[in-house]
Image 1 (cartoon, chains in turn orange, green):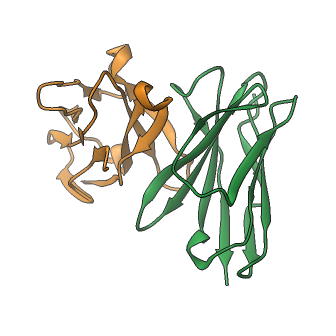
Image 2 (tube, helix red, strand yellow):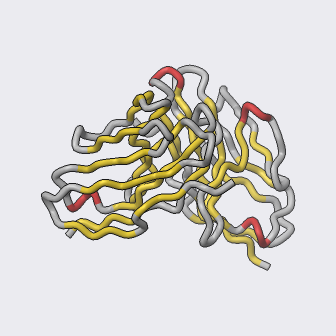
Length: 110
Length: 112
């Protein structure tokens, strides 16, 4: 069963515009949700996790259990935000298996 | 601290052969996870090792196995290679659980 869905493979926004990368999950229980990012020619790295409720590089993500979503948002996109973004879920009920979405490639147009 | 290292970076094998990939975690990290990344399936969790024990396992056949040594270094083995095993294999380490994972550069395996 698909645990994490990122409906957009590609997303382009203009610099300064708001950006939202969508993530929906299917899991009956209390998952932990994460966003990972991979910049060009760099390694995959953790951007933020819902449990921390923090803002990293201007990005925030709120876990909406009713809509089973964990969308990533930033009010004003910057060129350096161009990267591949992956939503991920840790499933405590299945031995903490880790599920990644297929990723969204974000391009910020100058 | 040095980051996660993986060796080799590139590997070419033929069907039926077996392969062993190596991962050295960040110093002090005890958890090592392995992932398979393909264009069609994306990133898929293989397994996680902690203190030399497999703690979590994904849904891969038994041809995929791993182990972890006392210094936390980990190896992944794939036996009887199939064409579909061609992928980027990523290793990630974390201090004690998988909440914050630090990824290596990956090993690109091509099966001919």
